Length: 210
Length: 300
Image (cartoon, rainbow over all chains, first blue to last red; front, side, top):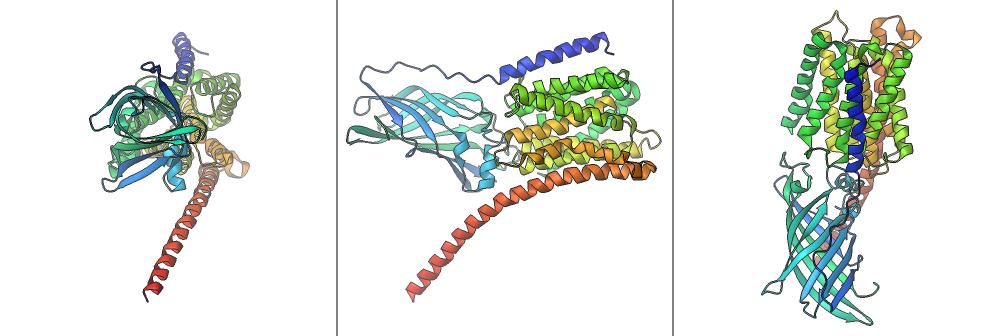
C-alpha cells in the first residue's frame, strides 16, 4: 500500500512524538545563586497578606490593572537592616483577577498566561545590591509562560515587626518586563494591549506560621 | 483588526485555494490535504511566535499534527482504496496526531487513545463522502464545521486558535467557491489527504480548546464541534440521495445543525457567566445610586 519514501516519511513522523514528549518535560528549578550567610533568617511568605499587581496599557489609552492573589515562597535575609536578601518566589497564574469573570478566563487561556500548561511563575534572585537610599536592586531569573529571562527589580524593605514568638517582615518589589520576551504576544501587533508590563509585588513574610 | 481579517480570512485562504487548484492538476488529489494544512500553518505562524522547534506553546503542536496527517494522507494517496487500507490509514493518522498533542488533558495514555480513536473513527466514517462527493457542498460543509469549532474556541477564550481555525475554514470556503466557478464540470474531491486533514483540524481544534478552557464549559460542546463534519452524512440519507441538489443541501444542513448546536451551547454558557458579571456591576451601580441619593438627602 505504501511506497519506500512513504515508509521513510512515516518513520520520521514516528520520531516526532518523542520531540513532543521532550517539550512537555517539567522545568527544573534554577540553582540557588549564592549560599546564605551563617546568620541568615529564612522567612516564609504569608500568602494571605501577599499579592502581585500588574498594569498594562489598553488600546494605547488607559492603564489596565490586574492582580495575582497567590504569592508563595521564601525570603532569606541576614542582619537587622537587613544586610543581604535573596528571594525564591512562586506565583500561581490561575489566581489572576481582573474583576471580570470573562476577562479572567481569557487571561488564563493560551493567549496570555496559559495556566493549564504553565501552572507556576517563579522568580529566583541571583544578585542583590543595596543602594544608598536603602532600596535593593535585585537581579534574578523569572520564569513565565515556559520562558526564563533575567530581570532586575527595585525592592524596598517596608517594615519589620515582632509579633509574639514570631517575627514579620515586609518587602515591595517593582519591575517592568517586556511580555513578548516571554512569548506572550497577544494583542501587541494590533496595538490593543501594551508590550511593557509593570509589576508590583507586595510580600509579607514570617519566621513561623501565619 | 481589519487588516487581520483581510490576511487571515481572505488573502491567506485564497492563496491556499489557488495553490490547491494549481498543484492538483499536476499531482492529483494527494496534495489537497497539504494545501489545507498550509492554511493552518501560515495562519498560526503569523498569529503566534512559533519560537523555533519544538514550539514553546503546546497548542502549536496542532499545526504539526495536522501537517503530519496531511503527509500520511499524501503518502497513502489513491492506493488505499480498500476498506482495510483506509482503516489502516485512518488509525495511523489518529495515532500519530494523538501522540503529537502535548496539550493539557490529552497527555495520559488513555486520553491519547480516546483522541486517536475519535479522530480515526470520524475520518473513517467521513472518507466515503470526502472521496466521492466532490464540488461545492463538501468543502462548504467542512468550512461550516471548522468555523463552528473556531467559534467555540473563541467563546471559551482562546482567540489565537480561533483565528488559525478560521483561516482553514475560509480556505475550505474558497476552495468550494473555486471548484464551483473554475471547474464546474469536474468535481474537486477532497480525497483521502484532504478529508483526513479537515477531520484532524476539526477534532484536534476542539480537543485543544477543551484542554485549555478554564470556565467549566460543558464537554458536549467540544464533542459536538469536533464531530460536526459527520453531519455530511445527512446528504446520504435515502430521502435526499435521489437528487444531487437535495443531497448537497442536506450535507451542508447536517453540519450546520451539529456545529450550530455546539456554538449555541457555547454562547449560552458564555452569557451565563457574563450575566453573573452584569449582576455584580448592577450591585455596584445600585450602591452608587444609593450613595448619591443618601448624599443628596443629607445635603438637603
